[in-house]
Length: 214
Image (tube, rainbow, N blue to C red; front, side):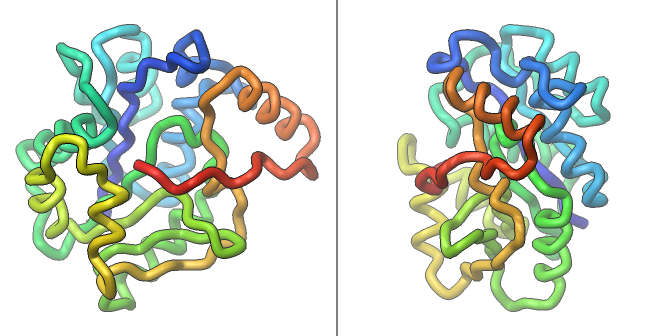
């Protein structure tokens, strides 16, 4: 089984408002991200929500996701992911042959086709980490065999999951996808305006690619 983990506990400091609750294409940014995984056939999806605003947890539940509603803020993305992995291990008890998809929840135009391709490829490759690429640049979501969860949980504070992935050498396989949306996240008001323009004018390329980070 393939699970999904969406860290959604960021503080939206550069946006100035809770970015995951912004409207986009008739739904919120968070709902759009959840919908992409649902449309790709991912049934078990966990959103790690911050203590405030409570509307993020409520929105995720309405969209059909399981929710870990944090009681205290996390210090960074790595800490948020680790909290989610502990919840998944306790509640879903994934088996060694399972995998988990990881993508920050601020990827609102994620293509279900890219998610489906990663899931298909996982069953036919010896690599235990699959990273999507578009025009040679890595993006999200990343798919990892469940066996990697234990190592991620043991990472020292501030290590970063991206650094862990890069350390895995031949365990990592890049998968070329047809969607530039794997590079599209949402950090600033300018990003949001670009997304609104892209929604009304599909020929606009979403954003210039950003460095791959988690």
